[in-house]
Length: 300
Image (cartoon, rainbow, N blue to C red; front, side, top):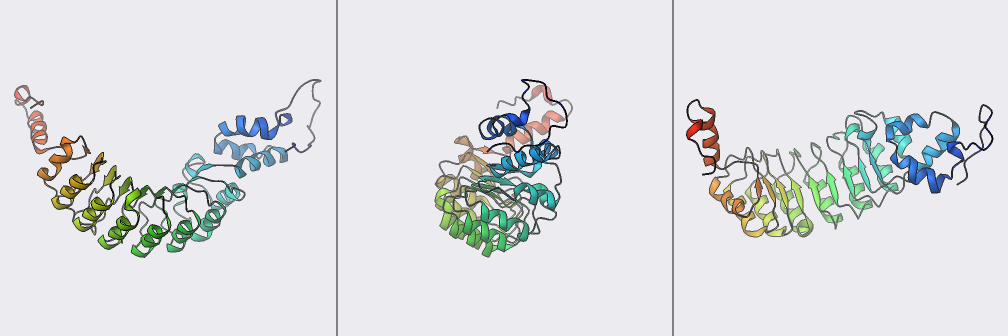
């Protein structure tokens, strides 16, 4: 694309080359604008009409958009302007828009970007099942999805996701408190074969039935976060140890019904567990007590 002609506003030295005189698609877009943070691009497009056209052309070709690069909060009008021409996005993160992002804002973006592989909507509480349906229906390549702290996510919404996302690998359902064992069981049966990372943290409705079904259907599971899942106990953890050979990390802090014997088999395999074994906890406590530290050998 040739840069549009625009008065320079002053005399140009003979032989001098202005930035906008450089080839846009061969030089400026791939080698210059790709290195400029989004926040600076917003300022740059205010310089002139030519710069505005250049920035808009760059935005239309974005593969990755993270609203956090613009700032901790981004107005609705700014997001609309930034994404109005984007049709090739593969990664989309909109957490800074959580206070106002609605289905009407998100669904058009999803419909224009069917190649999306990673979407982060953590805390976006104004969305609904409609947005998740549009994502599942229109983005068949979706691999990573964060719905952390999205209270509107229920069993029906998760079923639609499980039915229509054949390559889903990473799913964050932290604090999605409407979800119960039945929904997680359905997810495991439909998409368990490809799941590598799953967070069900801070959900008192999730128990051993869900964990055991995950274990039996997710042979590639590497990371599982059950922090604060008060109904999860030792039976679920023992099933994980038996059926999940790829497991690398397990989070069970505040799971008060998970006993050490069920974790020991995973520890022996080198699985990273966020709860220290009782002996280590006792030694650390003794070490903190005056007079005991010199006699404690933490390598026991």
